[in-house]
Amino acid sequence: MIGRERMTVVSQRMIAERTYELTLSGQLVAQMNEPGQFVHIKVAEAADPLLRRPLSLCQIDHKQGQCIIIYRQEGKGTALLTQKQPGDRVDVLGPLGHGFPLDAAPAGGRALLVGGGIGVPPLYELAKQLANRGVNVVSVLGFATKAAVFYEAEFAAFGETYIATDDGSYGMAGRVTDVIEQQGLSFDVLYACGPKPMLKALAERFRGRPVYLSLEERMGCGVGACFACVCHVPGSETAYKKVCSDGPVFRAGEVVL
Amino acid sequence: MNRLAVELPGLSLKNPIMPASGCFGFGREYAQFYDLSVLGAIMIKATTKEPRFGNSTPRVAETPSGMLNAIGLQNPGLDKVLAEELPWLEQFDVPIIANIAGSTMEEYVEVAETISKAPNVHALELNISCPNVKKGGIAFGTVPEVAAELTRLVKEVSVVPVYVKLSPNVTDIVAMAKAIEQAGADGLTMINTLVGMRIDVKTGRPILANGTGGLSGPAVKPIAIRMIYEVSQAVSIPIIGMGGVQTAEDVLEFFYAGASAVAVGTANFIDPFVCPTIINELPVLLDELGIRHISECTGRSWKTGAHAVHCRS
Ligand SMILES: Cc1cc2nc3c(=O)[nH]c(=O)nc-3n(C[C@H](O)[C@H](O)[C@H](O)COP(=O)(O)OP(=O)(O)OC[C@H]3O[C@@H](n4cnc5c(N)ncnc54)[C@H](O)[C@@H]3O)c2cc1C
Ligand SMILES: Cc1cc2nc3c(=O)[nH]c(=O)nc-3n(C[C@H](O)[C@H](O)[C@H](O)COP(=O)(O)O)c2cc1C
Ligand code: FES
Image 1 (cartoon, rainbow over the protein chains, first blue to last red):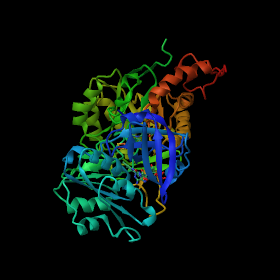
Image 2 (cartoon, rainbow over the protein chains, first blue to last red):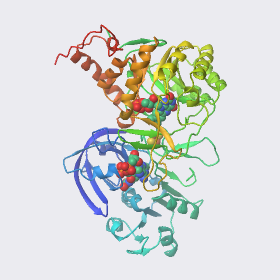
Image 3 (cartoon, rainbow over the protein chains, first blue to last red):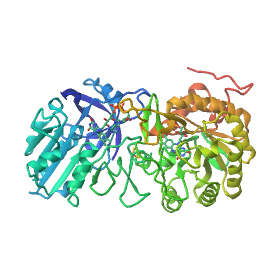
Image 4 (cartoon, rainbow over the protein chains, first blue to last red):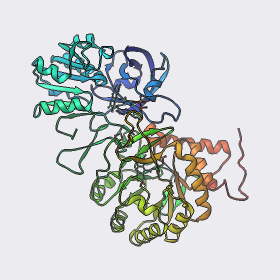
């Protein structure tokens, strides 16, 4: 069930360059289950900035009634979000969309999680839930530079974790696809979230394999009503999927990247 | 007495609040949040003869207190709307206003004739004002003679009243409104979005893939109010007003300007419950202002001899 709630800020801290970890509490957490789902956040009560911001669920904690979002300060909206203090309220609509299919990973099998930059957060809840099901989790996380790296130890708690940086300032130098090649990483299922070129490279490299990708698109409503976030379906001029309500996670090949 | 009930051509509305076309899909998404029967009416997404994909993404860009959209009339096409969307909406006790669009006059006429016969379609809204398509849409909304001709043709075939949706992207909206009234329109809806553009300062290129898009949201409200104020004094057919409505106070402002009902668009994206919230707040506001019936408010800003508003608080 999608709900709307003024959730309470429990804490907020900077965990990497321009990157913040925001913990929220509220009733809505009870509705959150799927890793890869997102929430739509109104960062200010005022009419400006007007639109909600889509941000992925990074951790869901039903016991504590809390969820965590990790976001990078980009523009006006995320800058305002950094100012939220413990006790402040944040207007949250969610959980939205369809997340990563856990059933695609066989118990005892191997899941390769590939994250790029601010695409890393939703993979954390995924890693947690997969590990709970007895799936072997291998994570490959790419960042621009050392200062941008976050959650290395957190991912390592669930399995082998490789960090790559574009400038080679930390971990391995190069892209996540290079790391997969160099380390000869195999998998039963691959889950990825990150910039489109990275998703495209993975889809092409592993064509025909079970690969699930989380897409980003500019949104209006976030619930499937406004047609802002559509993408093409291969082989059709008019067929479409909505990133907000049919996605954001799609099987590679399901939509045109 | 239902102080919110409004009678318009083809439409017996239990209240004057309805979601605006394109901001509510075909209702399915918002039915997750509340019973759509509470709404006065629903204006469904523009329907064209064939399915349309619309423009490339990005299709939306934020602006100060507003947003630009360039969806490009994406819709599943007339057949699917008739076979799936409208029948699904029949479970709700709510009249549907079918927003229709086309690339040619023939397409408009064909869609109008067919969709007007659907049992729950109580009125048509002729979208001659979409700024986001190359052919059709706004082309029909900027030349009074063309708009009048299209209105006449659609009136001939439609079995329900026809409302024409005006574009604010014209120099003389009153001339447009009069031409459409003379052509036989039963009502007007206004305003559609204003053509605008945003440029990404990092890339130096327009944010929207389409370049331009239609501006909506609170930013456009004063323009909508001014245009309704002018048009309502020049025509005698009713106006369904829209543009930046977010609250019950906004609704009243539209009535005072000259509207007889009000549609809510962009605000649904910010608060999916905005329509029922406004509907619940309106009676409270009417009480505060000592207004017996919402219809008394239409045109109060310009009507001579209208009662002064008593503020009881
Ligand atoms: C499903 C989904 C999940 C996401 N999860 C995360 C996450 O977990 N962490 C994170 O840091 N970022 C995430 N993003 C990206 C995040 O939504 C944008 O960075 C954010 O909206 C930027 O807002 P702003 O006000 O700072 O920027 P502005 O440039 O001021 O935003 C202006 C408008 O553009 C939109 N916009 C700008 N960049 C993006 C973008 N990349 N994707 C979608 N809309 C954008 C904004 O939402 C807003 O409507 C996600 C995006 C999507 C679609
Ligand atoms: C995303 C979006 C899609 C729209 N699609 C349509 C449409 O299909 N047909 C139409 O007549 N108007 C369409 N409109 C215009 C709205 O119905 C309304 O006239 C306008 O947005 C002003 O109202 P608002 O400020 O409350 O949104 C659309 C507006 C938005 C924001
Ligand atoms: S954001 Fe409105 S349909 Fe996806």
